[in-house]
Structures are given as C-alpha cells and as structure tokens.
Image 1 (cartoon, one colour):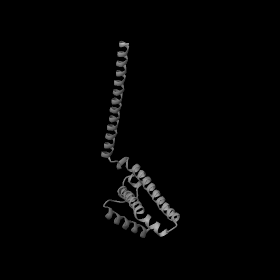
Image 2 (cartoon, helix red, strand yellow):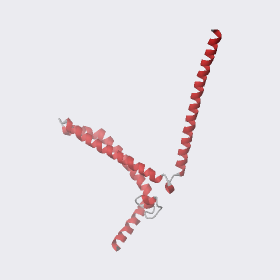
Image 3 (cartoon, one colour):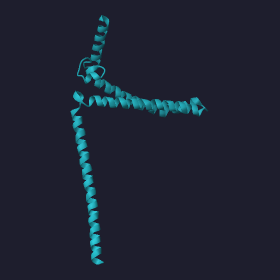
Image 4 (cartoon, helix red, strand yellow):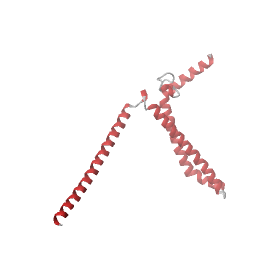
Length: 163
C-alpha cells in the first residue's frame, strides 16, 4: 500500500503537529486509546466537551426551546409534550453515555503508567482522614452513652440510699 501508507504518514504528522505529542507507539495502556500517547488527553477533552454539550443543550432546551415548541404546536399540547419528552429522553441518553464513557476512561487511566500518583495519595489521605473522623465520632458517642449510664447508676445508687 504505497498511497495508503503515505496518507497515513501524512495524517499522523498532521495530528502530531496539532496535538504536540506522538500519536503512534506508546505503552500498551496508551494504545487502548485512539491516537496512542496523545489518546488519553484527547479522550479527556472529548469527555469534557460531551459533558459541556449535554449541560448547555439541556439548559437551552428548558429555557428557549420549550416555549417555542409550545407556540409552534398551538392547541395540540399533547404533541408539544411528546416532542419535549423525546428531546428530554435524548438528553438523558446522552448524559448516560457520557457518564459511562467517563467511568471507562477513569478505569483506563487509574492504573499503570497513566496513574496520577499525587491524586492517588491525596485520595488515600482523604480516606484515612474520613476513617479517623468516623472513629472520633464513635468515641464521642460511646463517651456520651457511658456518661448516661454513669448518670443512671448514680441516680439508682442515690435512690437506693434514700429509699
């Protein structure tokens, strides 16, 4: 394939100049993504763009399109309601797809050579802090009930002496 190889080489060089990183090669984990080593950052930008699109288009649907659809459909409110319901369903599906893609992305970049060690350490620190706070809360609760039991004991001991 002379012309195919030349076209691929040209496309690769254009992508590399646009992205500023190589798009061929990389680690096995980077090759999970399109565009090789540039893939994780491109995928992250596409996910962010997808999230932004779903939020902005849903806001536009609610603020601008619903009154227009109601006006266009005139007296047929059920038709307008059906159109709005279909558009909302499309947005729900889009949000679900972006959510699923984000979970898959997080799984792919949270291990191996793409793992952000500082982020992992901060998450571990937060988890340890949450466990310490939970243990402290349990100790305060135990202390409270111990004081309640002591108070009941004093009351009973005082009641037995006076009675």
